[in-house]
Length: 266
Image 1 (cartoon, rainbow, N blue to C red):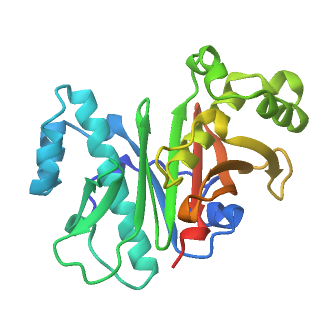
Image 2 (image 1 turned 45 degrees about the horizontal axis):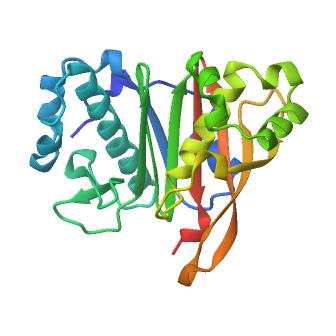
């Protein structure tokens, strides 16, 4: 089945999936997609493309706005996953996939006929956009945040003094304190929490920004790599420190962040 929401896809040549893979040094197949929710149409019509299990979850939302956010994220995830399966020479039509939550509430893919290992997925939405990504191995995390003044009001909840020093050393001090930069940091930490795979999830203040790496074009490059460390209980409950990278870009008035964990690759 052709993807009926092709006209909703937001093209972004500045930040392609291949660029994200290179930035993250992720060696396997990856795809991400942005959908314009304003072009999605009526939620009731779009819902015709859901499977029975998904309809059960859609019915929990009362407003059309919330339904469209939920639908956009699921359609984006299915299409991104279908792209990854095609890259892996295991084509499976997006319409054969279902997105359902696991016991932790994290979305994952299911299929009526599981003939291949299905990609891991991650979903986000903000403002008028939905975002999703898929990877063939390991875990992935995506987050999109519209740049608004709200981030300034809650900065003490996610931005540590150490984070501010790193931001200030990479950008000009004034720009480091700006709403766009703070939104990039927020999105990066949100994406990273989605691949933490631990209970409880790390708090925003536990994710410590250690370094920002510019792309080949320098600080004006489309993609920046935010490098974090965080402590958690590893195998057998033994405390360990983990280092993770997040690819970050600013697309119009949205911050977009993607990450994938190579340490979970089979």
